[in-house]
Length: 388
Ligand code: SF4
Image (cartoon, rainbow, N blue to C red):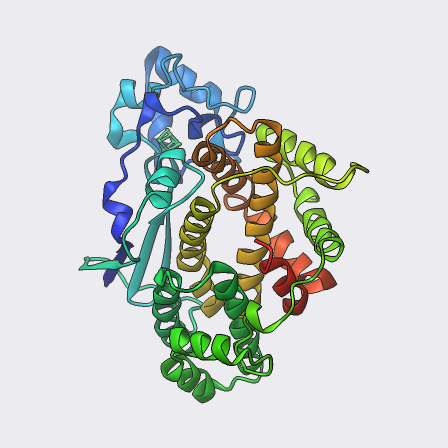
């Protein structure tokens, strides 16, 4: 089995008591694996009693105290770690914020933006995206993995990463290409045209094709770029973005920070009769951070299409997430123009990630909206992508 991790992965270590928004009070359920529950059951004495009191064996998780893990000490360190040692922490506790996916004989792992330290590392990583590969001694896991599709998508993902790393192109153009291309491939997936998929993914030269398309300003090319179409006016964009918001506001709120931030931002941007002024900010920084965020989304989500065969959904998720994050940024910057752009983005991105990426229900509700709400059609989202 091969293990692949992004180049920045090795730089992550939990900053524990120095962490401002500790994952032990994320408001989410903290699961405990069976083996760890069984061990906790054997612990004797006062601490054993505390474990029995605060472990929900039926649900397989800790009983939270005001949304907080009951074993988080006042100094933000873990009582279980202190009393029993790191070897008796549950899997979720030791693995967070890492995520893993198995593609047959390939295991891919990364770090997630819900952790502020992981977000800091990913967003500050100025190197081109690379995957480091090592051999590991683990059983292959094939499950529902569609290896024919997966192999083609791995080839395409490398090309997308190279496109995202090419600074001669704008992110808006790259996002339009991703939307258009994933939708195009989705038709082939729906008709099980695996030979065409393989040929498309192997033959396409993304960077050259976009440049050629930009030069020709050719709207009929199979790769749509923002340059080939006139930008829609503000009212149209506002209407599209507002409808994208509805899907996110309908999700189950997992923590107060998200609830407060999202409802205030939506109220300010869309329920206010006055024209919202655009604050001044560092455009280059946003382009940089949003590009790195896009790389993170592509790495984390694109290949999941080799399980659920929903490639269009991955492009919809990337663009819609960026629309919401951009709106949140505008709102926060407008409220406090002296705040550092970098800091605002860091805060928003990890709060957003906690709400969206760490709830299977919320992700699945979004995918449903992408299918049933017209605003998520790739054509409409292309308009939204042009204004990110
Ligand atoms: S959020 Fe990240 S840095 Fe903070 S305690 Fe959790 S794993 Fe550590």
